[in-house]
Each structure stands twice: as structure tokens, then as C-alpha cells.
Image (cartoon, rainbow, N blue to C red):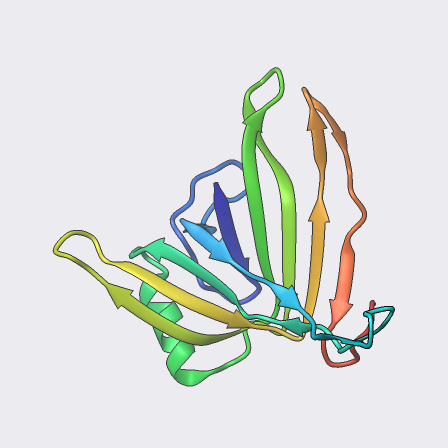
Length: 159
């Protein structure tokens, strides 16, 4: 399960414990890459700065849809966007957050919706200036908290 929350008041319909009113996400796509050039036999390689894609998500139409549409139209900053990936585990079979992604100064850069006659699905992308990526490992009910890996796109450096 993937859940999304903005610092601003865009509510979803999640009722998951600890994630009440978060937005339920069906899929997420994100990437980072860099150009690498090699001279001669490839022993001397040069790399460019990293190039980050926007975070693109798909979801079913819900209570957050109209607000996401308007944010794409208006282009206002949403502050921090928190994305949690959850699994069911432990002796109590509760939802556990195993991956956390935080985007600073998030803006909805695109929005589209489609339907073949049933409930519409929508896709939207978030642009951001800072990202934090943290994986927490679980073994039964024991958690090993990971160290967040953070990158500032404006400074092209960790923060």
C-alpha cells in the first residue's frame, strides 16, 4: 500500500491507523540518472550532475481529486509531501511503514484523468527541490530504522 500526505490540507480517504485522511496511491514512478562519458578505452570516465525525474503517481478518483486538479492549474507550492509504503507484518499484523519518501516544496506539475466507463483513474506528477529517501527493515516485530538519504536539487548536494 502506498499513501501520500501533503503539508497543506488536501485530504484523502485513507482510514489506515496513523494515516487517517492520507491519499491512497495505486502506483508510483520515480528515477534519477546521469550522463557518463568515456574516452579512449573507457578507463577515464566523466559523470554529469544527477538528473531527477518528477515523482509520478496514479490513483483512483477520490475526495482529493478536485484539489489535485486545482493545484495543477494554479501551480501553488504544497510544502512537504510525505509518501509512505506500508506492509502488513509483525505478531499483531499491523501496517508497518518500510519506505518513506519526503519531497520538499512539492508542486503538482501535471494532472490527467481517464476512464473506460468505470471509476476514472488519474495520474499526476510532483516537482520538488529536496528529497529524502529512507528504508526501514523489519524482522517480525523488530524494526531496524534506516538512515535517510537526502539530496538538495538546488544545491546539487546532500543536506
